[in-house]
Length: 603
Image (cartoon, rainbow, N blue to C red; front, side, top):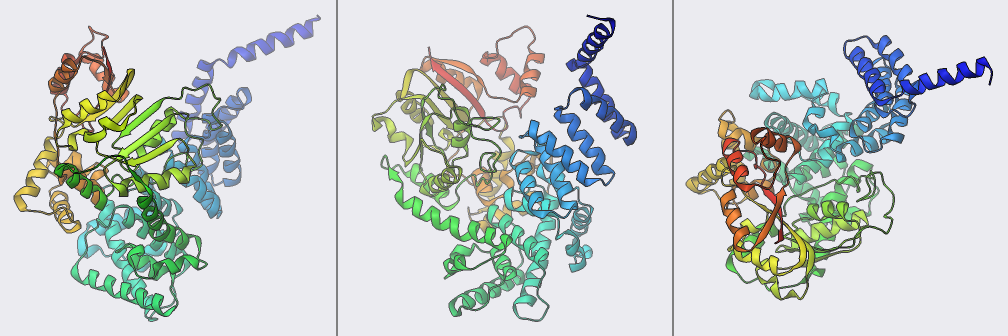
């Protein structure tokens, strides 16, 4: 080996040493800091140094894409983002970034695909509303809407947001939260109703495609939230007139425009309009086709599914019948997207791909599956499981079956059943999941023991129960409902929401106004109008476990909450100490704001 060869080896070893994760992390941090300080040229140089050492560094590729994007160089930005996605396919932020460059580059189909994937993947934990408000024209519209009648929205302003592809995707695919955005969308719906009325009677020029697409997306949002937006009497009269116009044109086989469809669909479900099934035969632009699929095709599918679902037990308990009726009228939750459905990797396989065949094949009972979101989460964890999913509500089960069919999943059996009567089903399970269910039954402890009788000797049961302490504001809301005699109808729910939104500065309502449930009819009904609700304390749970000789395996909680618990009880590494958790909840009353979700096993 000569001297030059030795030098080359030494140089290569030094270069390899420079690729240590800590060095790469330091380089990325330096580049990121420079970019956010406005030193884009320096950031670009550092990024290229980083990528020379680690060409598949996803964060570095994404940052270089952002540098190009900020400089208006969208072709190289798209190239960098695409390389980043080849390494980190499930990174929502990168999907959002590449979609933004595709939109500016006037490639709407690609922008739509990646915005949809970003939304499905959760946008790195940030809420959808944050990203909607990246558009300054939307911010202006929200500010005008919040100013009351003095801040009217106008057609020129709406034209500025009609081409916002992310806004349209968010409206179609996600429940939008937040009082300011709701007020803006409510005003937008009123304005679009007037435009559609003028379009329908021929007193204005036909609406352009972008405006019609925005109208269709808004109508899909109204269907998702089950028409929870408030409206005035005159507004409802206008909507009824347009529905009559649509009904007449369907009966006479007259012209139906996407704008007319959207205006009616923003106030009433299209599948309830006589003759709406005939619309499925027409050739429609994508935005109208999506609206018809949501409001006509899917409800018809669910009606067929509901008739085909087997009944595993009788349902004759009066409380069970009342609970069933509630969820027949308002299946809950009305979820839209799952990463698998959005094309972001197979269920149970974080990077996509098929199961290897070595995974366990447990028998799992989901007792109270609702609309199936919980089932999808379980199949992600156990792709080869055999799942029996039961619920009182056929409408909820039909929703779940449709979503299962969309995803192409197998091994899931849906049946209508009452947990209280399930003991004679003749089956046992390796795992039983019943989250958010037992507290709505007449006798939660009886149902608990029925489920235990179906659990194999080494099986695990996972339960979710309401916390007495965490639901104080909900209890006050339920008292308000009872005191005012509000009924569990869309009108009664809108009246309650109006009161709470008007008093949004009151601390007791703030947490509720930040939940998903507040922004849909089914969510509000589940939250404030449920026909049966029990709440529990940690000592009560401890008593249940002792009576049935069960081992407590721990709570399901966010890492930040667990870290806070460990900080409060540093002397113990026992995360199953219920006495400590009771003390922790007393000091942190919203720690279990969603529920006590915990797992148990027989001792």
